[in-house]
Amino acid sequence: MINTEPDLEDLKNIVKGCASGDSNAQEKLYNMFASKMFGVCLRYAKDSMEAEDNLQEGFIKVFTNIKNFRHDGSLEGWVRRIMVNVSLEKYRKQHLTYPVEDISVYDGQALTEEALDKSSLEDLFHLIQQLPPRYKMVFNLYVMEGLNHREISKKMGISEGTSKSNLARARDILKRKVQGLHRELKTNTKYPV
Image (cartoon, rainbow, N blue to C red; front, side, top):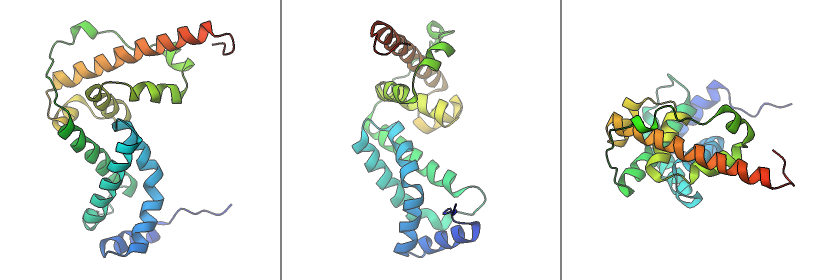
């Protein structure tokens, strides 16, 4: 089996080429990360068209700022952070956020392990995409990107309490949707749960 992944030296040359405006290097970099980064953008977008816009905008920023990449960490992580930030910028421009501080009504409500085990990743992704935009954004940043509420509040320009509340509400909505999905599956004899 032939390894098509570039080694560290090749990667440095691709980055150097991109920084100098070499379109072949830019194409290589784009081809290396486009499909993964589209998935990242899709998690934060309302649909695939918005995700494609965010992906293109993100790569423009990648190529504009690649001269600042220091090879300290992974190039993929650096590109991913740009894609998430582009998606957040677009979200902030499109949506107003409303502060909500009282999350006590959501304490203890979480998706059960059993419900998650019975759900396919595709089902869960589809349900996450249906969340209201601000809930989807906080959910993705917390669950998928591993940010804490302080980091989310800074990135989104909301309070930590609002971040916690939005996450709790997103989980509650997902819990109800997953349970509804399982009720549907149980009543359909073609697809036993």
